[in-house]
Length: 420
Image (cartoon, rainbow, N blue to C red; front, side):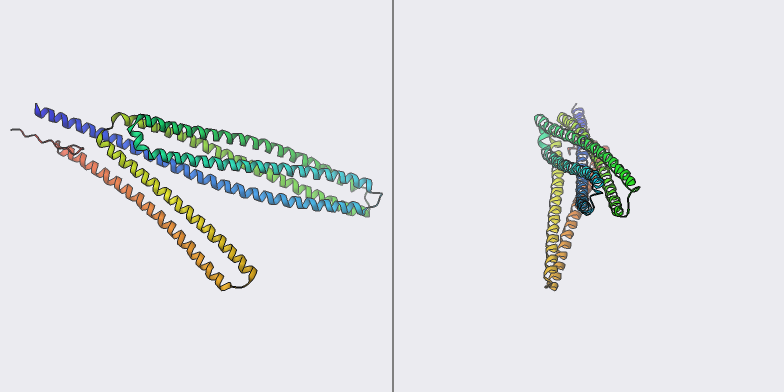
């Protein structure tokens, strides 16, 4: 009877060990999936930041092109006034009609430019909204890290699990609201694009009318009107250029709308993946609450500690990278200031070259430190992976010993039976 009880005890302990190993493997897989999801969200955030910078540069280029168009507009008005003041009274009526047509075209172009400025303001507002959405996503990631830091407490209490799930659901609702706002802004931008295309059509009609007027004027002009025809041809050419610029601006806006729609799709996909992660964490927490024992608590705490250590390493690397970038920008600003001083004064060239080389050496040193930090982080991750491999090897060895010696269990207990 004693032998049978001991065998039952051994069998029970082996079942508990297998169940614990299964729970640990599932928990480790869930944590790894969550870490991969967070890394993917961070990568998407960096990509959106790059797209935002590209959009800002495009807006600056559009602003420069509009300023150039305004300068040409002022020059055209000056030339038109000079032309009208130099002609005799006989051609004043015709010139007045031409002036009215040109002024209407100029006013139409100014209106299109005003609409372009308004679209630019809307685009800047949308860019700020994207930045705010990026900040909200970073806040969501911070909450996610805080949730992972509380993994041990979540596993020890079902009420705490409910609280964490509530936090994740609140973050998901915030992401849904941000996506809804972004869709609204995209719709408004599409309406503005439609208005811009309508304005472009009206401008084309005006240009065609000016062309027709120019053709009629060519039939009855004398030598004195030859200069006016050249001026009108020049004005038509300028208006053609303005129309092409407006078409290019409309094309750029369409491209921006497409890019924003792609970003919106990516944000919605990220929201769906976050919802899947939340559901997976819920299910994982419920499963963990059903079969934990004292031996499994220590291993889960170790796993949570490894996760926190990895996150601390990642945060530290991000801080060091930000410090390195800030230091590089500061050194670049000092370098530009030093170059300006050297160009203005024309003296102290050798000292400036020395400081320039010193700054370049400092920049190289900073980037070397960044590379060393990245290498160190990769080595730490490699060590963690190696530790996992060794742990799996030990578990396999324990299983092998269990098969060889039935008296040995995965929990380290040994039962010896003497029959005599």
